[in-house]
Image (cartoon, rainbow, N blue to C red; front, side, top):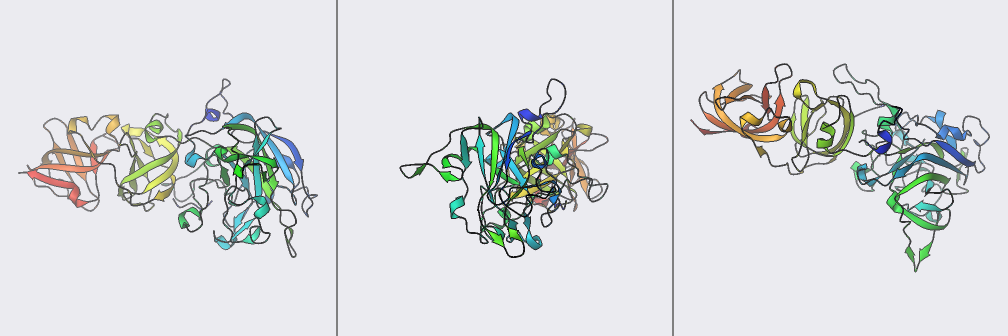
Length: 447
């Protein structure tokens, strides 16, 4: 995988100490339509849709674990445990359908997409359509399907599936994810005209994610039932069965044959955590955080904070970010030396230029508290050591902290200063460090 560098009910340990499975557990039916791959053993085994997907790259799909639907065909899968419309799920998305869609030549505006509509059911008898951006009857073959530049949402087989990252880059920056970690994080739906929502978010494993709240009543598969011309909401907040149907019958390409969807897997989405909730995880715990703002961006690291200023993390990364970036980030929690860090991040910036949380005023004596770690703080004290040009030390007569800036810092010995920055700890000694990038973050208040 090429990278740019929650804990839901299914993720909790069951009584036997085994993690529950977030992927579809069984095949209820497989009804393929006609097609050139329907009789090919590499593509006609419905059991390939069970378990985790097997992706590759955004521009190169892995066809070794997919099941073809054939022209107009369908497959119905079940989960042993209900999939819930959890308000904590990232972006309000509840489940993901994986396929072999891809970006042609790496261009997210030019895709190979063989669209399939998605229905869900609580009992396997009453089915509800996940409302797509364009109804199946409105799709145009070879304009919305095949090699095309059509932007849609609410369909499967539109977004690529990528492979697991495993210890990529250098030993100092190691990223690995299990199937349960990567393939339960949803990709944000594409939005035409928004480059950030057309391209791929390398914080997820891809696939097309769906919101249970968008389920509507239908008169037949893929056809809306209307009440006075209005769509009828399904009004459900969970399901156990999912049916995926090739959306357009009869579309084909010369020499390539019919255009029909291939499905790889379906997963339940992992709920996101706040930064405060993530800090409560055990060492090595895995978190998905969707509401984090960068407060200080420094060499080899940056700090993220909850907008309500309740908690913060240090993130170890050489990737370029800026203060005010808001992001979705995943990673494993490290608590060594009293710090709270993510040392193996995968993240995507969801917006930039946001206002920073206001710094919390906190005296030096409180900076050793766990609650202070990582927060954007304003503190004060007397300069007791001018340091080596990159730091100075301040004291309140009992507690001390180093003020550190990558490009140098200076404050006269004996002066009183106020400083604003992210609260960090020295890894070996646990000494408090205030890190900042703006030279204006340290201000002399008296001699």
